[in-house]
Amino acid sequence: MSSSLYGGASGRRVTVRDLAAAKERGEKWPMLTAYDAMTARVFDEAGIPVLLVGDSAAMVVYGYDSTLPVSVDDLLPLTAAVVRGSSRALVVADLPFGSYQASPAQALESAARFMKEAGAHAVKLEGGRRVLPQVEALVSAGVPVMAHLGLTPQSVNAFGGYRVQGRGQAGDELMADAKDLQQAGAFAVVLECVPADLAERVTMSLAIPTIGIGAGAGTDAQVLVWQDLMGLTPNPAKFVRAYSDLGTEMDRAVRSFAAEVASGAFPAPEHAYS
Image 1 (tube, helix red, strand yellow):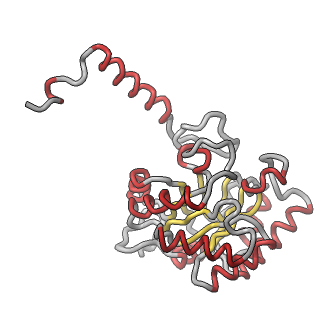
Image 2 (cartoon, one colour; image 1 turned 60 degrees about the vertical axis):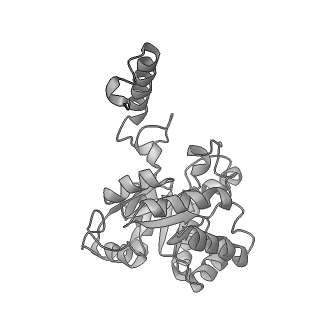
Image 3 (spheres, rainbow, N blue to C red; image 1 turned 90 degrees about the vertical axis):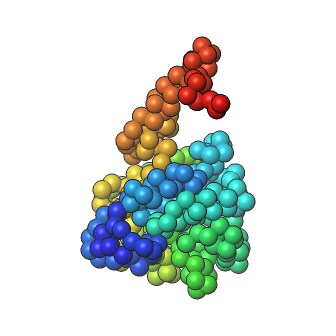
């Protein structure tokens, strides 16, 4: 692996050891969601070292209003597509709601499907101390685990909505959860919608990388849903920065195509076979 995690050339996949080495070097790195082979290829060739097949697919792919309805069977083909579309990135599959909470055995069964049927290289699950048995079981079985603390969208109903987590005493609990998850064997932890100072303290306290989303600049990495990054999401969250206006460009292209079809300008002779 090149000494640089982001954009480094390599003839192999990024591994969890590469992420750990980047933490030791103090190198910050980007992570994006992906749900299909074509966008996975673009992100992979751009040097993104980690691609997450997030349960956010429930909303951006399947049209639900939360992550809760999506299933293992929904996410398996998306994960397989991202693996096929990439050659360097570490592909992490989200374990969806209801696929791991019941028991360590259920978690292992779900994770095994993602790794055997879709080719995922790691899985992600949400929660702190309540999922430690699941994390330990997965790691013991050889499944790399990315943890997720703070605003965990699968618990949105328990939280009473999408709101910042970890203020006051809850910050101490989140810190304890992060250390426990590290001890259980998680190779990284996502920190979502937590105060920036807390995220920085957690990052400094852990030997494993932290990945922020709405957690300030003090984490080791940053992740965004790619549709948010490209400006496709209406009314995005405060922590989102749109780096493109792809929605406007797609609208322009669709309208141009439709107008040319209606006028007879497309297809032109050069687009036809003789």
